[in-house]
Figure 1 (cartoon, helix red, strand yellow):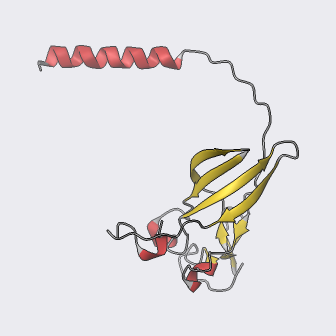
Figure 2: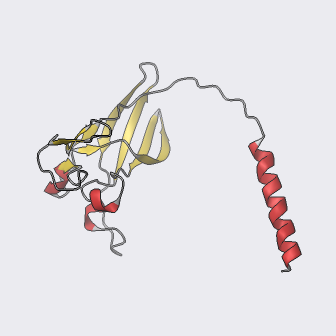
Figure 3: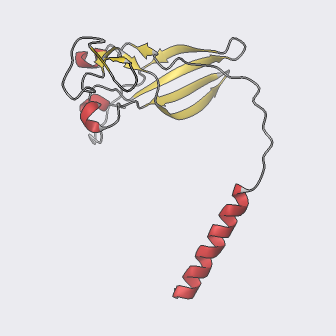
Length: 155
């Protein structure tokens, strides 16, 4: 492909992208449900015992006592008993106001997140009350014959 053809194709792609960016779509928020940021669930019973507490490595040194240090930037005390639910990256509707969510919370990087668990959670929304009900958590633990994920982050 010649340079001119490539540049022309790139220009067309960029112009078509900007046209979509200018398109207005009418939408109305009909309801919302809120999950407090500091919502935690126990690690599943088949998970390693060490995952019963999360956020041990967030201070730069290992802290074993729950709420044993407070992050100076946020004032939030860590480590936490259980696993945090915030940090969802995948959502799938299951119908009947239920959603399957992939919680892949970490604490910023690999070095401080080894006790943050990759989990699936099913949550039921109560749109009228504006609340979220946690129906199940940590499903499925499953197996990974190809060992693509470290043992602590089974999916």
